[in-house]
Image (cartoon, rainbow, N blue to C red; front, side):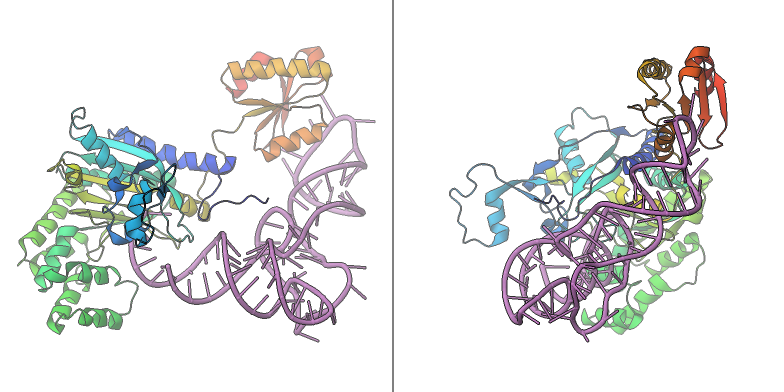
Length: 450
RNA sequence: GUGGUUUUAGCUCAGUUGGUUAGAGCGCCUGAUUGUGGUUCAGGAGGUCGCCGGUUCGAGCCCGGUAUUCCACCCCA
């Protein structure tokens, strides 16, 4: 048979792993400097843990695991599919890292010191239809902090986003908004009862024409006064800076206490950033930003890459009561998620990966014959003992072949050891980039390569 | 989930109205060079044309199904 992969899944070659690890290592290092600690959770959760947390659309995208054994015993198969599911499946693959984390926090609440800052990097699965940058198995790299409503953490996440993409060399825009602001806007235009519908349309504003936009709002039954006001509030470009726009919107939605509170939260966060000399050119207040996840209650984040046609590469926000669903109320959390696979695609398309990766061997020792082979094996052992990443050509072969091997594997040095070198107790080291060669004793060689 | 699209050599892609033995570039292998990679030159290997079925004297090409890729919608990292 011809082997294939399930739709939307991929293998990773050594080169790809090396590049993926470069991304993982970069993010991990930044999270650590902000005091986050790692945890892991199982690939599978109880289905009941996941359902209902991601909205109706999200529930459909959860991969269910069929019960083991005689799953059809005592099951009424005339039921509709959604009902039937709960009888034949009690486990599911994790859909994101946030909900399992909330479950973890609730289960371990007595051992956790709050506020609890954790990072987590694991694959998640979604039964979505794949596209470019959209996979059915992909990695998320999350950091969340639970147990504190402090807006300092929101400010930290801006810094973390900026630091990570600065280190990766990618230009990005960090868009942000606040769920309370969206509430305020719908209240201010007298459409609070149609919050979800209005916000869904607002979120699409960039993709549709103004005519369609107005049309859709009309269909919801909004008056033209309301629509005018909405347009003014959100999209008039009267203010140049985020600071100014926040003020403009604040007065426009002043009738809504919750909306004003949302604005003030964002102003507080910007205040922290200003105090820390944060370069605000990478962030952009976007009052039309409305991430779908039903659990966000405060700040909302989204990161878009410049120069690549791909969805958002990071997301996040504050959720005031996620653990409440598992019986632990009044624990505020805020978190962000890096879409590692999309970041990979961005760096790849923009040629931003470093030329040489740190995990390749630094030197290849040649293999010429029975006696030379022993000498070479001794040499490669000593190099490794000295902490130098070294490899030895496995069989006797023409020198050209061995150089070619080093060339293809991007090994920067070749240590040539033949009869001449052995007789003089030296190693002929060739620099594969410059082409230069020089003879060294083994001690000198170790010093040269260390 | 809805609509569309892609699939031909290891990779990127040509392939005429349905007609003999399916091509190119790159890569790969061998040699020129028995201790020197990248460049050059000469030669060579490599294809159930995604898969299953149908129409036809004859299918890479037409039809049906299916898988897969990508795109739009939806949603999202």
